[in-house]
Every structure is written in structure tokens, then in C-alpha cells.
Amino acid sequence: MRDYQAALEKLRKDAAEAALIRDLATVPTKREMFDMLALHLTSLADHVELAMIEASKTAKRA
Image 1 (cartoon, rainbow, N blue to C red):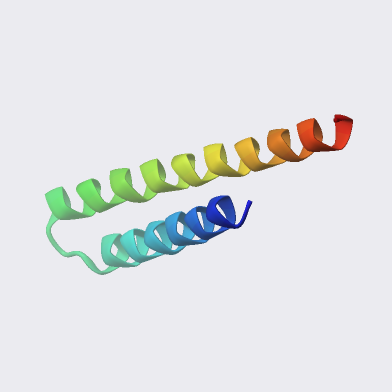
Image 2: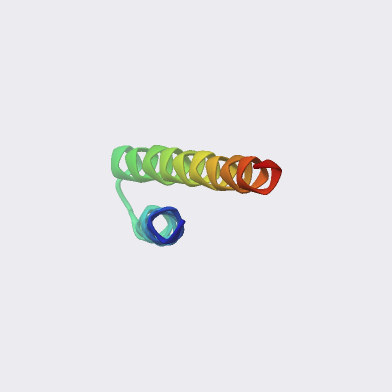
């Protein structure tokens, strides 16, 4: 479970960094690219978090 937690924290951190770069970017294409990256990393983090919740539920049933 620690691997999941570490991956989740890294994805959230990377998403926040991409959002920061997006906010600082002055070139519209770079802003758009970092926006898409931030959204994608956030989505991946959400999926990891859901997997953690499901794994926890499954472990409790066993």
C-alpha cells in the first residue's frame, strides 16, 4: 500500500507543478500543453486513489 501512496503523492505533486508552470507560461501553446498535462496527472492520481480504496475494501472483506 505504501507504493500506491508514494505514487499518489508524486502524481499530485507533479500535477501541481504542471499547473504552476501553466499559470506562469506566456506562450499559449505551452500554457495549453501544461494544462493538459496537469489534468492528465490529476486524472491518473484519481485512478490510483480509487485503486487504493478498492484494495482496502477487498482486504477488509477477506
